Structure formats: structure tokens, C-alpha cells
Length: 394
Image (cartoon, rainbow, N blue to C red; front, side, top):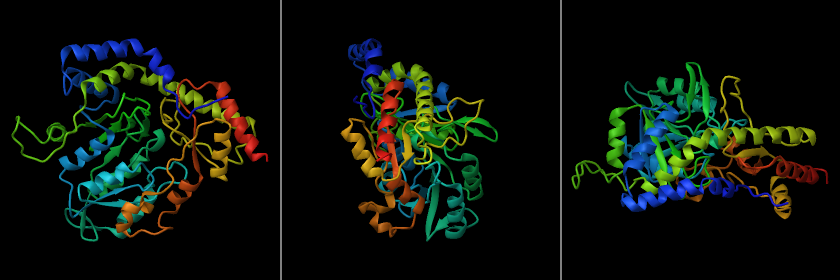
């Protein structure tokens, strides 16, 4: 049996007719960039998340870049984030001339550790009357990443952000629809800071047919600045009061995403069901003492989506050999991520060394993503688990 890591075929076959209709309509109208479908999609995301403003952009990467540019983050500044995430999170900070400040992850959730964040802010940073400073650089923001579909511990992170007067930019690229049971009530990923953003890369839970992204915020002035920033900083046409970029969302991508968005809750429910089947099958196979399954610490009977399982990540002894065993049996898998960002060559200038972020380094050597998508059958999951059991029985 062949089991791919991700299969979008069934989803696209089911929605082919309405997507094609929207595609043809865009071609008829000749409105290709920042037209009515972008506005409609932005409004739909506001309704879905509860945010007041949504700004469609060209990718998740450009979303973070635009936020940093709109906030004026640049040379002499620093931004706190995690070393265990996709490269773009730290790269955007570096691209605007600021310094990424890495804080280690929580070993169970893989998300930014509030304890490590507090230790860093209290022991490595200095609070002045108006700023938080690290080695002469003004710390401008914290960027927690809701990795693999699970929200960070935002109550604790927000308390620290308030104490140190730092805005929060939520990297919710992998977490659209994820819910967090905050002390003030349930909240959606992307809505718990000054701004948050999504990626609609095709493999995401809500995926476009190419690159696309979106920013949400409740700050009207920031929303306006972001709309200007995504269009070369231009307002009105050919008058530029800031340097922005070409970060505009295409009409075709917005149209496709608008067709898919009403199905997102159903797809999230199916992903949760797939995760439950995995849990049952790994228990049946007697593997719970061997591997570690994904953590869902916020699981709450009153919430549906405390984890939306963008990826299904296990910790596995002898990970690389297991992956090769799965490959030989035509089972897809992936390693997210093989290196912490502090170990990437392009960040050598930050001066980190092996051992600086032990939880991250352990995760890079032990974690493995298994197949997960809404249409994955229990039969295929049983096959995956049986092959993993076969590997560890040798």
C-alpha cells in the first residue's frame, strides 16, 4: 500500500467545479490583483477569526515582512522568536536589518517556552523607562510560532510581553482555525497579539493554488499602514510615503481560498479524527512506550480545535532509520526541521553554538512527520502503524 505524506487530489476533485467557475469568472472580469474577491475573502476571514481587519498578501513570508516594515523594525532593533520553526520566521527579521533573538522551545509542544522566554527577558535584557534592550539593540517584538497547528501558551507569553512592553506578532502560518482556551475565554490563533498572519501555501490546512497569505489585526491604523505597505507603500497612486513591497494577493488565489474556506471546519474535524485513530492504533500496537505522540495540552470539551494537526509529529528513537524503513514501504514522512535556525550557516554571525538550545536540538534529531490529511483512511493509518511496529520489533 502506498501512503503519501499529503494527498490533495480528493479535495481538489470535490471542489473542481466551483473552483473552475471562480477561475473563469476572474478571467472574464480581468480583475487580477486586489479586486473584489480579495476584499470578500478578507471579510470572510474576519468573520472566521473574529478579527476586525484582514489584509490579503502574497505569502506567509511576505505577511511577516510587511508587518515588520509597517512597524518600522530595522537596523539597531531585535525581535524575539523560536529557533525551531520554518526559516522564513527568522529570515524576515534579518531581512529588515534587525537581529533575531532565539529562545528555546517547550519539549512537549515544540512551541516557544514561556519559561525560557522569561529567563531570557529577565536575565539578558534591560528594561528602561520606555524600552527593552538587548546588548544595545531595542527589542521591538515577540514572534511566537503556533507550530504544527497548536497554539503557544499565550496567557504566559502575553503577561511577559506586557511586563516588558513588547508587541506580539503571531506566526499562525500553520494554525488557521486553532483555538486557545485563554483565561478570558476561547481565542483564535492570530488574534491574540498586535497582529497575526497565515500562510496559504498549497500544503497548508487551507491552501491556495500557489503562494498566498493574510494578516489580521484589531489595530485600525496598523491595518491601514499594512494595506499601503503591500502595494509598494503607495498612497495615492505614484506617491510613496513609506517603502513597502509588492505583497499583493492575487484575485485568483483569493477566489480559490473563498471556495475552500467554508470547508475548513469540516477538514479540521477530519484531521482530529485521523489523530485519534493514530492514538488508538499506536496504543493497540504497544508503541506508546517507544514513541511520543503529539501533545494537546489545551484539550477542552468546550473547544473543537485546540490542535488542528497541520502536521502529525512523533518523537521516535532511531528516527532516520525508521524514516528509511517507511520509505521502503512507500509511506511518506518528513523531518520538520533537520536543523535549529541557530545552526543554519546564514545565521553563523549570531554567534550561537551547539548546545545553546537543547530542546530544539533534541527535537531536530527525534521528530518525524507522519501522513495526515482529511481523507486519510483508517486502513492506511493501520498500515503506517503496523510498519512502525515492524521496525521496532526487529
